[in-house]
Image (cartoon, one colour):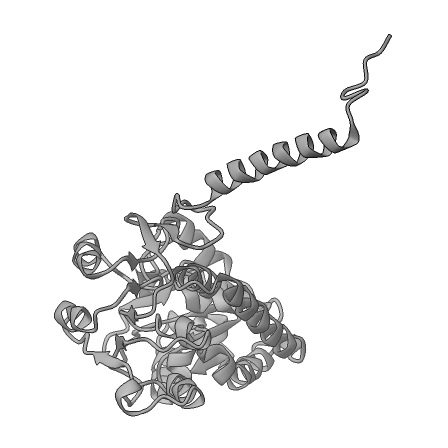
Length: 349
């Protein structure tokens, strides 16, 4: 005969027994999940972020957030967190980039609430960073070296670029992911990414002529010395953004990027005919630079240069925002896609 569990046990006794077992299970679960400070702690007591120099543990939700190296202030600001200190913009015509200032104004930041500006003309000002007494230091998009990381970590838990990225090569999505997690706003970071992706898609769809165009980003081309050509590789966020817009990396850039892990590269102008697969070129410079490149017997034969399909970032604002950042993308997106669209039309000639 099959035995039935609890058969013949009074109902009241059965209920008491079940409740006791259930209580023990709840107690065990509570003991396993709470107080340990592990990654799975729902209270958020401690999180661990892996990165290029190992891992960083952050206890609790940081209240005082400092950022170093260029764009890292934008993630917390976009999520409503005002850094106690951030890097001064040593370019672009002002100490604070216009889209950053716009967000500070939107958040009502003024007077004593304004972030301390770190002057990084000669590298990170460790003393100034320390003086802001941060709970965490964000540098997810950066070129930190081990020594920099070690010094910053003595001040506060520090988040450098991810272990799977090169220096100055953290994609904007990944930077939002790691920095939002570091300041206890991981869900808000996901929402921010989705919102930016929606804006990008909307503008790209409205400008289908740029789709599929093979585009490269030249950099630091000097009119007085055209013996070499420098450019950003596929590891840099500027060319990455072309792909967000539906454009493509030329095979020549892909090949170089596969063989080199740096965010930029340089080749002799004599070898520049490898760029005969480029439809559009984006570069910092003006018409004088374009004329000089057209007059060069090798550079002048590159299809993009030959067809005037070159975006000249003469404006500091447009040039700086060509690097995709959480606040820079919506600020400059329409204007940037317009000049890319104009270049795409010329590439057809």
